[in-house]
Amino acid sequence: MDEPFKEREHWARVAAEWIAWARSPRHDAFWAYREALLAYLGKGCGKALEVGCGEGRISRELKGLGYRVTALDAVAELVEAARQAESAHAYAVADARDLPFEDGGFDLVVAYNVLMGVEDVPGTLKEIRRVMRPDGQLFISIVHPFRDRGNFVTSQPDAPFVLKDTYFGRQRFEGVEERDGLRMHFAGWSQPLEAYAAALEKAGLAITSLREPIPDHGEGEEHLKQWTRIPMFLWLKARPLGSAEA
Image 1: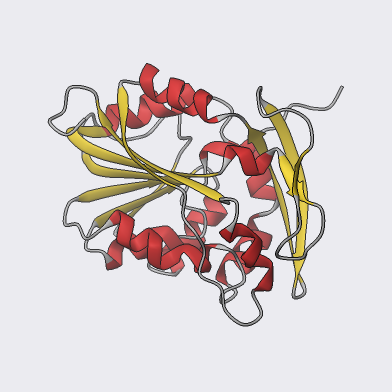
Image 2: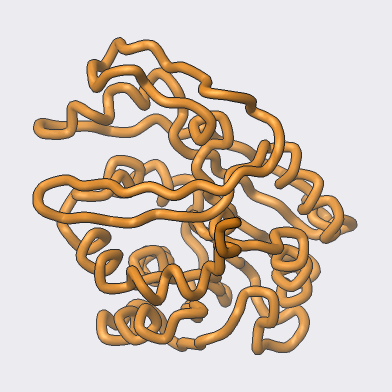
């Protein structure tokens, strides 16, 4: 039997890969979605927490939007990379299931492409809910659950997308991407949208908004044209149940 996947150990092992991958200009798909992401998050002036900050690019964007940002990750090397890039106002190394903050301290919590690598999604969301203000907001980005369960049969923009097995259930994934001399090992879990919605509900959070963004793509980014047909990412906003906007 395979050894159980442990997210902290995986990301500690590939931290240098991720820093190089994420910081190479327009290398990662993030850059094709950046403008839409900033528009969806909107300007702010409160206290924001990024859970799973990686090398800090989302925290830097939150700073640019006007938030006072705390960047947190379970991997010390990634937090140090974020610190060296002056990505946030404060930093912490901690597990997302045991956040080192008082109750109700943050106006905004961001979990950008991190929940796919979290073993205990309900527990993580419960802890995130604890540190949010009663009228606070949570933003989640995940790889779209449908995208996780299939692939395009070729690299052509009009290639068919084929579902390999079933959309339902929880599955572990591992894969390697190589492009322009860089390599990145990804790993985590894929699960249907219902699982995320149920975990949010259990944590006392209500979905208030949902987006399936379409990428911008320019010269040299022909591979992104496929994702104008099927969503690569799913974005959610949620608020505590009982808040004025929930």
